[in-house]
Amino acid sequence: METKRCLLRHWKIEDALRLYDLAKDPDIGPRAGWPPHQSVEESKEIIKNVFNFPETYAIVLKETNEIIGCISLMFQGQANVELHDKEAELGYWIGKAYWGQGIVPEVANSLLTYGFSQLELTRIFCGYYSENKQSQRVQEKLGFRYQYTIKDKMVLGTKRQEIVNVLERSSE
Image (cartoon, rainbow, N blue to C red; front, side, top):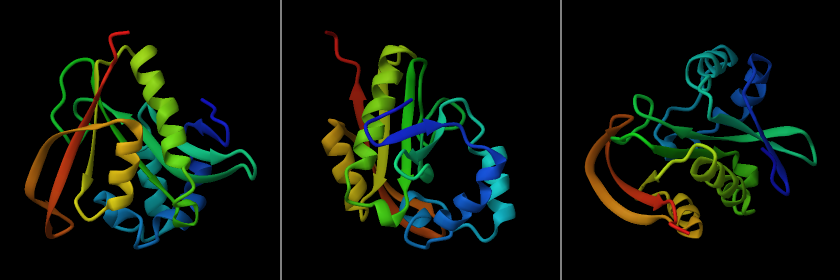
């Protein structure tokens, strides 16, 4: 998949060093509910065991051919929310140097269009923890609407509040 500024491609083991460089940042993972990566080996394991699903993509900046984040559509069994047939959960994160540039809405729009048109999904969910205002803003820009709140969700040893939003395929 391609957008104005980015390519979405599947992860490769050779991407482990770049993944580690991005994912070791303590401001990245905890916002999304996962701990910072501790080593390149850990990043390799994440590529093999977490990023190996068909709709999980490295976000590659065309200008530099550098990976800057990750985006995925997750289905039953891999998602953080309960899903039914023809539903998925959108997940994403991006390196701190790329925050505030509109890149996540750009690539997410492309993946959402693909999910609704090619995968024939009817609903796509997306969540954020209440303190993650950037993710809240991304979801608002994409047109997601409030669905429900999970209070006191244990995440990395702390109780957090998760807001779950939904986007439904238009009937046009």
